Amino acid sequence: MPNPIATFDTTEGVIKCEIFLEQMPITASNFIDLAKTGFYNGLHFHRVIPDFMDQFGCPFSKDPKSTRAGTGGPPDGSFTNLVTGGKETRSNGGNIKDEYAARISNEPGTLSMANTGQPNSGGSQFFMNVVHNDFLDWFSPGESKHPVFGKCVDKASFDTMVKISKVRTRDDNPITPVMMKSVTIEGV
Image 1: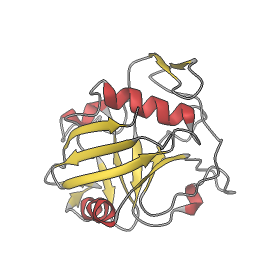
Image 2 (image 1 turned 60 degrees about the vertical axis):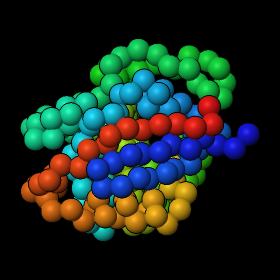
Image 3 (image 1 turned 180 degrees about the vertical axis):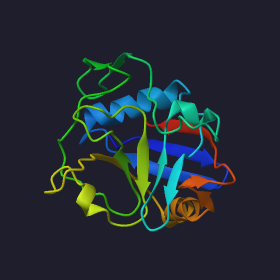
Image 4 (image 1 turned 90 degrees about the vertical axis):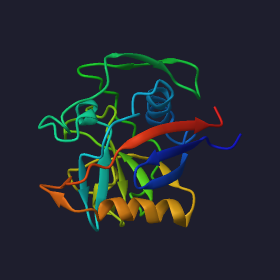
């Protein structure tokens, strides 16, 4: 079966990404579960940096000017691993276990799990790479370890990622909020 496709409908345009379900089943299943429950709808990009990335997925970012944006995660609970059929858990603030399965680099257009820098601290936040950030690869010698779980499917999607990264900001937060109107999943 082909990998699922996520459609990110933002106020700056549409981004379509292949989700690497087979290669990254825990991280991808977590993302798909959150998207299907509407978790991401109405949230805002809370951190965008040109020539680096766009970060998204904090529940506190529903208010685009919240000082807590970037500090939250999903509720604790469980979700189904769509590859194995087993149950996975979100705990300690909605965190999932680190998945260092596929050696996929943080190339331009990829989706990568954000975390606090501590082990097993990813949850709902992720970022869209707009350049090759290989120093963030989980298999790189650096301290930052961010597993990639998807990639945009076309140039138009990548161009929208870059456009978001270049909006005017104050402290890396967009001055004019960029909202995720919806995230929909096809193929699962």
